[in-house]
Length: 290
Image (tube, rainbow, N blue to C red; front, top):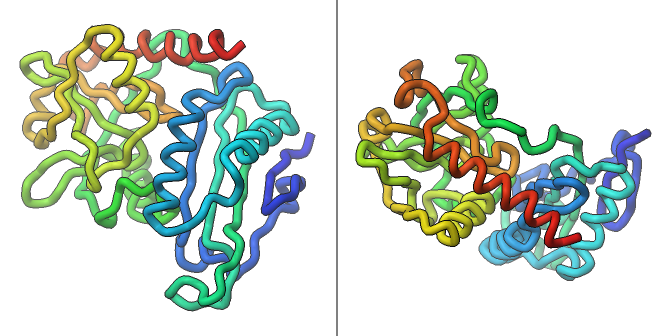
């Protein structure tokens, strides 16, 4: 069956989908995107993702392309038409089509909206074969990392560098201070030498990850303490455990960083607990929605 995409009000075969060469997302990276996990036919943390989409759009002074209710309907329809129940749904909003000029179009044009979906494997049954390795790189991205912009060239280069070294992620840090920001496409966490669960607090320096937020909420309900405080490369190197979170990684242990074992090089007890906690969140969201 041909994959179906939603492009500016039309459902079209994805192989035929196209955008205008003067779309500002193509010309300038003038746009926002979101990725939502589809599990057993239900979107996980849909409200969190749509909240973040709206916030990112506000930050770049771009209106929502549809009402929230209409957008939610389109997301469901794209999944239905593609017969995808386990997957990732991608949506992108740009400032639309206008003659190439850096300032916003003098006469406002309709935002452009593209939505696609692809199948992925379901939430892993076990953490034991779910981990990976990472490298570290200086963070070369722009200052407003809290905006989920389509400007991803530094992320692309960092992820490619990781792949070339057999790693799944690049952990980014601020040059000079050595303070860790986040992964190139994930939120990054450690369990430090004293056993505290730590991740950097929200600011313009990092993306407010939806999986990050959902996991924190689950931790609070479970009575687990989180230390939202920055940490350095040296603290990371001495950590007992490390893991990443995202809509695609869920809770994924990082077993080696720059070729050096994290802890004993195996998924640690805290990461295991959080992996199971988030699995219940994903499966419970589906159960509660039924």
